[in-house]
Each structure stands twice: as structure tokens, then as C-alpha cells.
Length: 151
Image (cartoon, rainbow, N blue to C red):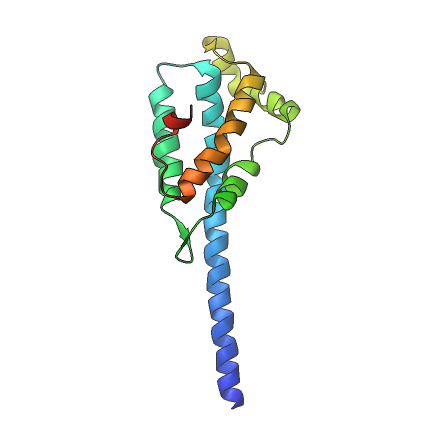
């Protein structure tokens, strides 16, 4: 009898471990996309960049969001809340001051110097904040088609 109980315990451990690893792997993958996704959103919302606009849109759609929409955690769709937490809340600042520091960092110097600004930092911050929930809802419901629908 003890042998059966040990086998059941081992099986439960294996199932829980597989569930945990699948969840952590998916979470990690989403978090890996978080920073470049936010940076690309800032670039397309803040500056007029006719040369790179389509590339940024393509990257957002085809490298990050569409592939993530197809992912599941243990055969279940990813919840809107999980998308929000892993794709945006890990990298997107909680307050405007932090966001302003990011946008004014050296990473965006080339954009600031060479491109026309079309939105203030505050407008970009507010726009991204307003996009997060609808994007995550659509990803969770397999309705996301292109980031352009949210711009």
C-alpha cells in the first residue's frame, strides 16, 4: 500500500512541477518581451518616424504580441490580468516621473535629435496606460490583430 501512496505522491509532484515550469516559462517569455514592447510603443507614439514606423509595428505584432496570444499555460488561455502583469506592469512605470526619466534617457537621444515630436511625454504615458487593458483583454480572448487598432 505504501508503494502505491509513494507513486501517487510522485505523480502529483510531477504534475505540479510540470504545471509550475510551464507557467514560469510562459511568464518569463512574456516578461522578456516587456521592455522592447514598451520601448517600441514609446517610439511610435512619441515621434513621427515614417522610415521605421512599419518596422516597429511589425515587431510589436509579429515578434511579441501575436506569438504570445497563441501561448497557453497548461492548455488554458492566459488571463487578461496575467498578460497585463507580465507584459506591462513589470516594465511600465507606475508613475509619470519614472516614465519621464526613461523617455529622456540616452536611449532615445537619436529620436529626440532627429525626429519631430508628435506627443508630449505625459500624452504618451497616458496613451500607453489607456491601451494596456484593451490589448490584454484582446490577447486573452484571441482577438488581437494589430497594435494599430489601439493607437
